[in-house]
Amino acid sequence: MLRQLRPQSAFSTQSPSRLIAIATRESSRLYSIKAESASTIKPQDIDPSKLTITKTTTPKELVPPNELVFGRTFTDHMLSLEWTAAKGWLPARITPYQNLSLDPASSVFHYAFTCFEGMKAYKDANGQIRLFRPNKNMARLNKSSARICLPTFDGASLIELISKFVQTEERFIPSTKGYSLYLRPTMIGTQRTLGVGPPGSALLFVIASPVGPYYPTGFKAVSLEATDYAVRAWPGGTGDMKLGANYAPCILPQIQAAKRGFHQNLWLFGEEEYVTEVGTMNMFVAIKNKETGQKELITAPLDGTILEGVTRDSILGLAHEKLVPEGWKIIERKYTMKELSEASKEGRLIEAFGAGTAAIVSPVRNISWKGELVDCGLRPEIEAGEIALRMKEWIEAIQYGDEEHEWSYVVPKLA
Ligand SMILES: *Cc1c(COP(=O)(O)O)cnc(C)c1O
Image (cartoon, rainbow, N blue to C red; front, side, top):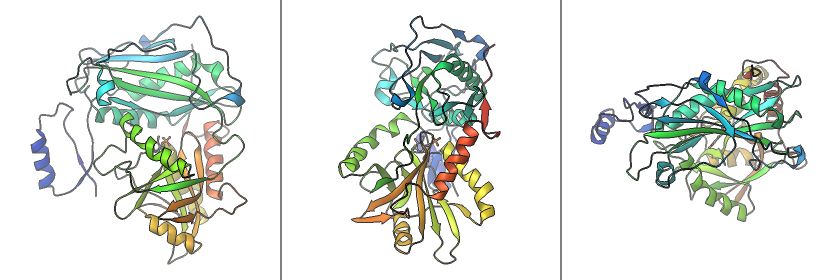
């Protein structure tokens, strides 16, 4: 059972020693704290009706779709909202894409008061713009910001503003399937002080980058290095949130793995060598049960060390709906590298893949672990397993509106 510590607010009256006392009394490890944000005293939530739009006078030239590189080029405009502890959320603005001007003492530069989201806008066959489960991204951004004492906000209001923003940038969204507009909502602490404390001011901005398919020429299965000398996330840590602070420390191990010829790190945790995530994706494995021969789709549980991927959740939902009737069992449980190696040797490892917004799924060919190369079940001539292929199809059908589904949000046209 997970126990969650719930301070009343970021300015909790509970002293740290008292919190420890509570923890000890309950004699359980704390895996995750559910913080409330610095904006508990909420003078003004986001008011989308106050949006102002200033259009650029120098529109950019569109990059040909086949030349798009992930996160390299941005659209004409950006959406920004300032927050102060005294006034709450100030009116949102869509302005030309521009540099920020921040005091060098701003808390974001010193203590990593920054969190972000990754989501996409898609164009359907009728030219309508769609978002995929944007409420999930809003909930997650609120969870991330609250944890680092940045303000929270009404998710529906930000979706309304993002909708206006993506409509403004409509010409940047390619119509071709596989293409989309990657959206990067970001929140930073802007208070000018070196004092370590909750920021009294913040900036929320959203920028957008047109992107092509992750695998332009079809799937390419990756090789992973099981990483045990560096840890991505730990119980009681912040690995279940998209905080900027979680990502910079993962680049060096990634470079080291790349030097040894591997595409990504497979992040392990603990003496048991639990498999947690792959790079910045959630990890799924399909295995035949050793005792029963039952086919199982397994992913690690949300125990505080795993990022709550929207793709992960969608795959689990679709698996319950479509794979269970075919005889699959869908399981969220801890599993170890040793289990994978054993299943592989016994021919029971059917396939493995990463899951995240950028690629939807990313098939895994093998995993280097303790001098062994664990084969993940793909025949040499194929680049993706059945489940990965089908999941990508199912999810894309919803994202691009080929299949009407409650997960797809049609962006209203600008009035
Ligand atoms: C963003 C992210 C994911 C994937 O989340 P999605 O919502 O599916 O894009 C998985 N793991 C980590 C560490 C991430 O940062």
